[in-house]
Image (cartoon, rainbow, N blue to C red; front, side, top):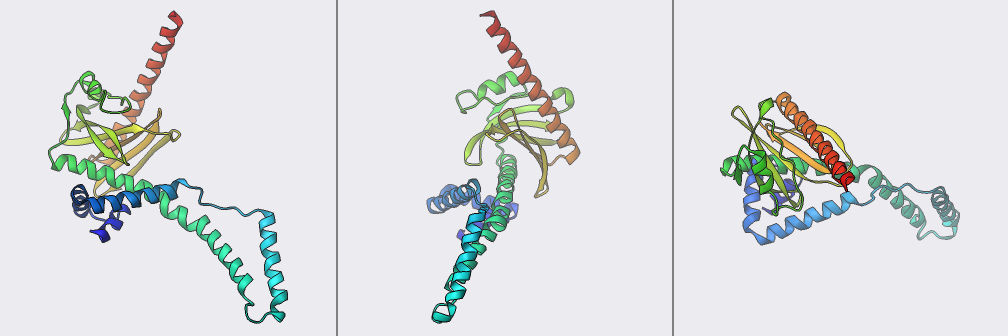
Length: 264
């Protein structure tokens, strides 16, 4: 399981193995702690400033040290390569920082979260736990989240566009509790995961993982992830409808707030 844990973090396992690891983590404290430690390490590296652009003065000092060591070579045959080794080490560290680490960790973060999203979607279907609150009324589903989350997710009615609201539930993604709002298109279910984000607004990004289509974007201070076995075109239509309606609701709320303030 310890060996599988690394593949699980990197999104390299198939769906069955991923679910097996997730079940094990729920019952094994040691592996769960190891998983949390590795996630924290990845997050720390991802959020740190990994790149290093040496200053002109730094370059001059490195070149000067190499030249000085070369001049001293004739009088010191025992350690002629010490300065060159130090300079080479600095260059190697710069190469790793500028090229390898960002490429390894930043793309892996999105991929890891996409794997979590797909696993949560599949688990909700396999465990017959699609909803905690079952309702087609957005005015029933949205208040249900009150007091259960530290934010208020938008619950949008898209029945007019052929996407029926089914209900909602709590889920856990990216090391935090999130809202899952459930929709249905014919026989296909859509999990729409929502949680706060400090990232700037970002356009839709489409992914495909383990036979499921995933679309995610950032808007209005929230991160949105939609996942389903719907075809990519219909899921994109769903995501666009969610974005349009969410923006309309936000603008309407801002207008009502300005009107309220103006009366006082």
